Length: 319
Image (cartoon, rainbow, N blue to C red; front, side, top):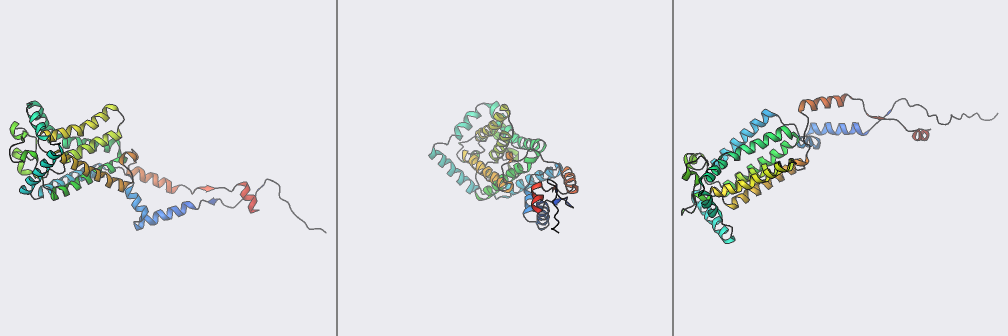
């Protein structure tokens, strides 16, 4: 009697008792959970990822940061002699380079009362108003980019404090010889925290770097990068340009102070880039609020594991 053999029907595969679970998912979940508990790479990535800002936290953070900035800036010793000496050096260097036009601009604009008075109020107010407005706009319309842009602004301001401490500098209007006009005193306007009745409330020898330029350039570049309307982009570039004219015309800063503000902004942007791995305008425009993120995470955790069924060829190979 010959051997009995059974040949399965062609095209029919034996059913498997359970689907094959994707092995990559549990490994990824384990690594992510371990990293979160240990503060490892996964936890660091979580901190660096864009988050939806919280309104009260941001208000308190901005207010506290500006208070600390003002406190530290005004606590820097007013080294009058050294500040005036540094001002003379900068003025001499600009004359040597042929860019010492501050005095000509100051006297020319001062001859038009309506113009210089407007610039005094511009110098005193828009420095704060526009910066706050851009922060609010980012918070409402670009929540995913807000934290990165805010970090650039804070780092810019923080490194400026180092400049105030290491390099005390008198503004042109305080230089001896009467070459420059203090437009606030002449026209009796409220235009500078370092002139008139407010001169004892602010450090008068913290002119380098110019945060009027640092902040206005941050506002302008941020708005230029995140808007598409031509008129908005033109205004975004005009704002720091006009601010540069104002700080010179009112004799509050030299051209080189403006350059110092630009260097501080470059540092601030580098800090933000190194933390988030991208410039703000390359990050997602919007991110989900924390509650919505938690709900989505809960739904994702409750979902069954992703499975894949064996193909007919794989099943035939196992047979």
